[in-house]
Image (cartoon, rainbow, N blue to C red; front, side):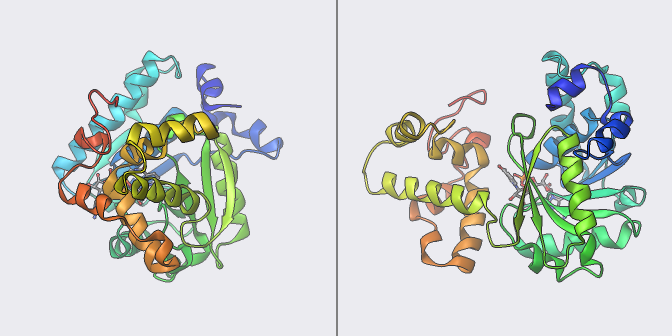
Length: 312
Ligand SMILES: NC(=O)c1ccc[n+]([C@@H]2O[C@H](COP(=O)([O-])OP(=O)(O)OC[C@H]3O[C@@H](n4cnc5c(N)ncnc54)[C@H](O)[C@@H]3O)[C@@H](O)[C@H]2O)c1
């Protein structure tokens, strides 16, 4: 069952929960979900849960960022209505959605997902903030792309209810959620999260905690090698990408993908994996130079490609 199938029938996954659980595949989604950080990923995650029937509160750092988060989620809702991937009216979806700077929004949530930038200390302080406000039964998840779940769990008083829930970008178009299991994650929590992923119409892939998990470790190393090849003048960005798209049937080339992800996000992940896994993840100078110059990819209009209206 895809998200599209579910929502196009106008059903809420929350109300569909009973039959989903009886198939042993999905799980009733939490009535209330909290998301800390309403950037590209946080907004996408909020949109996915809203479409599936949950109420969602996004917590941002200040009023300006709240406005940005609101715009991202509302424009994703409009896009879903235009594509008929939901039968709900804008007002009904927007009524289930709140953006605030107050952590009190997490108090009634059954799941809170942290989606702040990929900076270790910020993740630690953010997870502690979440833990201080949620109910004892609430599941806490991180959308980290690379940071060890056991490392982050070490900062929590209740690590057993903590897992990685790694959504992919863009959330509506990606059918994967990597569920990252820490040494102290409770198996019952893991199975609940796997069920929620299926109810969202995604496929959960379960990985034991290791830096970069499965997806980022493989995806980032291909991307870094493509940047090194560009640096060495092996081929143009277009040709490097075409080689992988046409030769290996990649849906999108590694350089274009890096632009879509954001070169700053990529650099952050590469630096962490370099520290954890060694030389093969050393960020190429060209990547550092692009980030220093503010050429962050699609979001700034220029990265390895020129972007206009979201297209390279
Ligand atoms: N961009 C991707 O392709 C991608 C894919 C998968 C996972 N991720 C991971 O998702 C996470 C978020 O990435 P993103 O691309 O959405 O980043 P982003 O920069 O677009 O969004 C981060 C948001 O967090 C907010 N924020 C920062 N500090 C905060 C605080 N103290 N309290 C509340 N909000 C705060 C920012 O205002 C911003 O809106 C990272 O861990 C990243 O590695 C990113």
